[in-house]
Image (tube, rainbow, N blue to C red; front, side):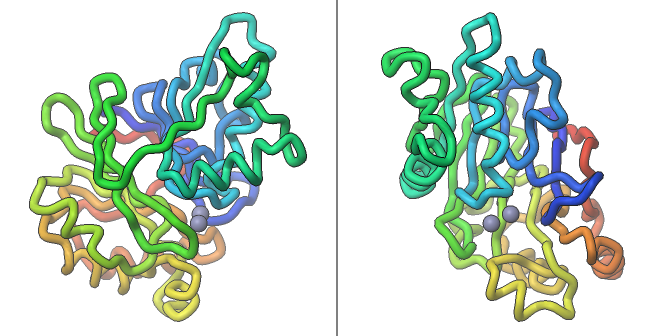
Length: 255
Ligand SMILES: [Zn+2]
Ligand SMILES: [Zn+2]
């Protein structure tokens, strides 16, 4: 698996992009950053977007992609997949003909640019050569992480936004996770705020790692608040865990 990090920041500034992870050109996990960094040809290759939750910093690339798809000469269609409550929120509050046109009926209800698809927690869907399974995580709104498995048994788990979890890791079980992409948004000194807003600190991540029945081959940190990136980086380094580091916008990782 080749994953391009379009964005992995917990807030937006020049050089800090909201979360979006592009797998093999065609599959996107979250869409906080999209048309501002991908050219037209790359945008047209996206077939499916898996959304962890409906917070704006994870979905706001979708409306602009939909608009670009309508304008493109070739007919491309994109499916947005998530658990029912997330899909309902996106339909009701984003593509509602008030905030943005309803691209689920444009250009025609039978052949629309966007399809919104509901997937069930714990049930795998096939996406090309991959199996993708949503598992519930703990955030302030209904949220899932996605387990991605390729044909060779390589596994990635992307948490999206999460605070201390309750049962997530047990559901994944003892399966080997080669790469974990996990939220650490705040420094240790802001633990109370992290818990209240459904995020982790380095210290809270340590507790999560101890809960996991598996030990991830690598743990890559997403969603740090840019103000605290240096502090979080130092706190992660201090934990001295092999294969753990902060991600950077624009980098490509292989799993
Ligand atoms: Zn969120
Ligand atoms: Zn977020």
